[in-house]
Amino acid sequence: MMLKEIKLNVLGYLQYERDARIPELIDMYDGDEQYVIDEIYGPLETILDDKTDEDLVNIIDEIMDAPTFESEFNEYKEYMDDEDDLETLYCSYVWECITNPIV
Image (tube, rainbow, N blue to C red; front, side, top):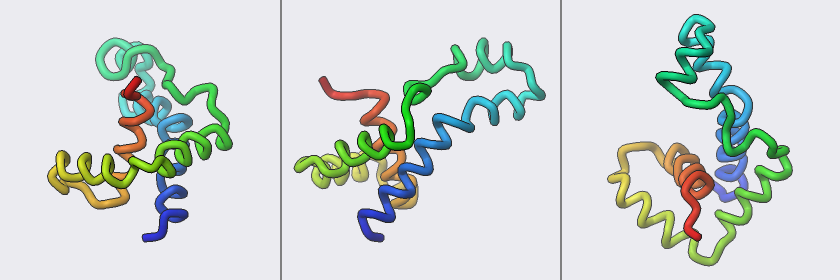
């Protein structure tokens, strides 16, 4: 899989997290928004709420074009013990970088 294709897959995942995750959860629990807030998700907002598609592309580029990306991703992949397919690993790695940034 080429890097451009991987980045497009990651973009699709981030768009899903931004646009569809919460509505899907609410729908899954028969529209019970309060239950989703109290028991599943917490406040109905995400770290990506105010991000445009261009912002998401920039975030992906920043993470995946970093000189340390390959080695850090390989460590992550080893840590995850190859339980997921490669596409899922890329998506979850970028998501982890966004939600738990190393300062």
